[in-house]
Image (tube, rainbow, N blue to C red; front, side, top):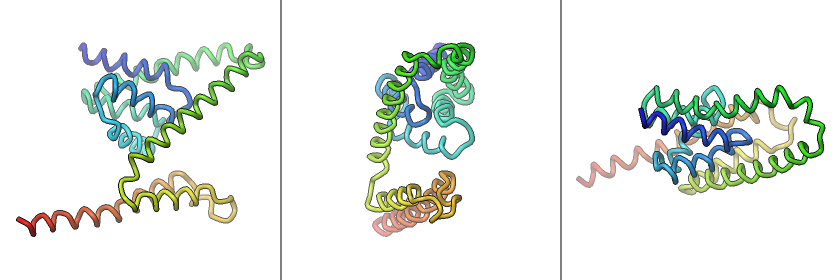
Length: 195
């Protein structure tokens, strides 16, 4: 029971300090889950994050579910998810009630401007960490460059579905499967030949 409470509180703290959606959760997860708790490695967080991107639902919530499940099974996944979403749901309800009265105030608009800048910095930090973890050989930058070029190419020159994040993630996954599977198939054969 104590471990479930610990999981809930860890993800509740993450939910309180994660602003800006999916990308902003990675530095927070690294601090809370990797450095403070030692429950997972940064590489595992990036792997879970990658899986969370291609599964239905909110990326950061999926990440919480996957980590909670790894720690204590399905109940751990449920508790981690509840801990993570509770602060956001509470803030969203409060915002829905009061935002109409305060959204036009200059102080609120300035605060949101500051939050947007901070979220941009967190997203950039996440991108740098993900790139460091992803570029393990000379093939990975090739996939990155192709996907980046296709995604930023002016609209109209490339069919819209090709620039869709879903399409790009699926094609990148297929490319990774083909490139790295061939590489992995070669290693066992070499090992068997040496024994």
